[in-house]
Image (cartoon, rainbow, N blue to C red; front, side):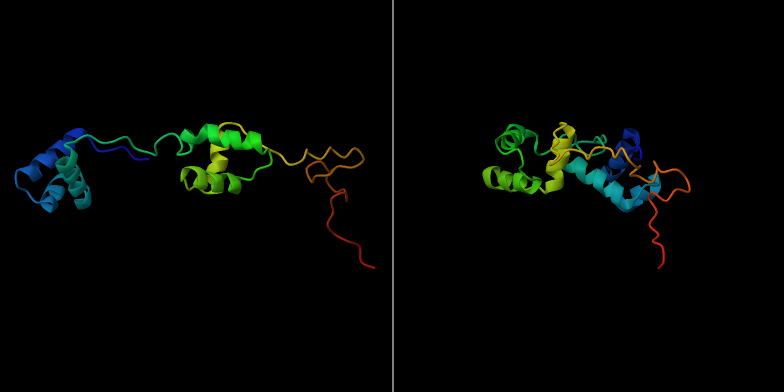
Length: 146
């Protein structure tokens, strides 16, 4: 992510526009984009702010206020799907989310649910390509011709 331009430059651009210079000419004088100069001045007029705001997405999730509800659903119905959680959130709280948002929310909290245990390792023969010795036919996909 790029750095924001200095507060000093912002102040000089806003002052120039306040003194009557057009947005286009102020942008040219200070070698910044026309849209940038306009956006800075518009924000100054609306809020009085001249400093850059924090960049990036805000931390947290829109599901944070509903954490107890979501975890309660999981305790109540251990095999509930992400789509069902999203539907229940929409009906109970009016929060519309996609299942991937629910997954990210649960992943951050370390909540997982595996429908079945991992298959135990095969003791008679390697079951993955990495485990087979080079040149062996254990994992060969070729079939002999008749």
